Length: 568
Image (tube, rainbow, N blue to C red):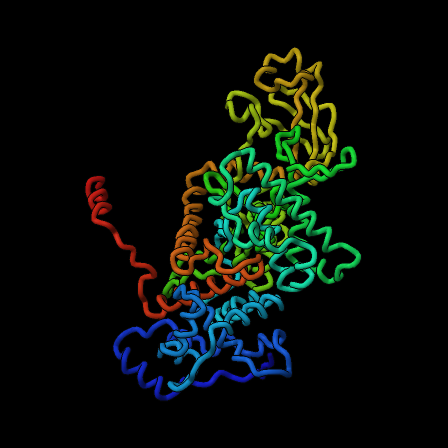
């Protein structure tokens, strides 16, 4: 598919007259306001790297980007979005189409997303919008921003271990049959395999007996190993091994089964519980959960268990200026990560992206999941960003009991490399160590000082009869102690209340664009969906701000009104 970069056509005169007549004296709809306010915000030239110079002519990628954004804003399917291009005057106005323009087939949108994801242009639309808003003074570096994460359910069925094994074999058979039907007819009994793998493996079709389920699990594995043996046979075409479904089957079998030879006989077993209490399978961040989406992972956070991804949303939250109207809060970054990745591991990438967009804040409001001593000190040093976040309190026994000596009760002399306990004793060793890949220092006190100490029961219960404290490097330790002291004050808590607004943004993203349930499979396309959803939310907020309208008119039920009346 080829593309020749051209400026967007101006709105057709007939469409302009119809739109102005229909909305005379009333706010124009979102597509019209976007075209009037931002013009050609997604130029074709920005997507040129995803298209060839020769070949069949394709539809304008810049306008397809706007169609995708409007599709997210109205939560439409591809068919509905393609139909909206043909029958909505406001969309024709925004895209510069005439009344007689036939639009395009809905499959073009899928092709566009595939090309954008393949050429790593997922964030291009957000970059272009934010750059345009920077030029217009609606955004600027500095100020305050807030970030939070939410779960995203993958666009695949939830499978248990038995269903996963059966579906992995079925997916590989389907792919091989599509690619080489004659070869499949030679290596498997098509009639019996069709009976077992012709329909998807559903839990309600499986036997209810635990013994029969265990046997079926082994049968799935034997079929899978036999199929892989045929694929990797020297007489089989080599290219069959490269099919993605075949590689997925290899991984699923490796992660869930063991195969050994005993007495000249092959023994296939499901992986059993290990001594550490696990089930013998790899850790969650490596374990496949579906043969159709190899990026999704099972994860749990408090009471929520889901199979999919995690979405991090950042937005501005700067207070209104002394003079002039407050700018709308706008989304500056979205990050889509594996569901098993801790929030703290995603923060540095968020700051790096904001730095590239020239939108780094002075203060970044976060919940405790993002806060570590390394990030508090490192974000300020590397990016000049102060993290406003509740630091997790000391979790030691002494700190929890509140009647013992916690680590913050010790005085640290960094130059002398000594720690002094509240009873006045100094440490006798100062050992640099590496824990979980991070440099730390362990200060140990002498047993001869700790054993006769009258406060020993409040200080340590170690069998060695001596107290040890573990310290971060000096700058991190001081930053951590300072943060813990600040978050105990009323002013800090009043200021930190600003972070709560991000919950409303996540609610808006869920209600308007449905981001909590992925439309597409794979991390790249799911991230593309989240980026275009963020652009759609920004345009919705700009549209409300341009027309001085409230962003959301929340409906209050009669029962809620009665509750408010009774509590007043």
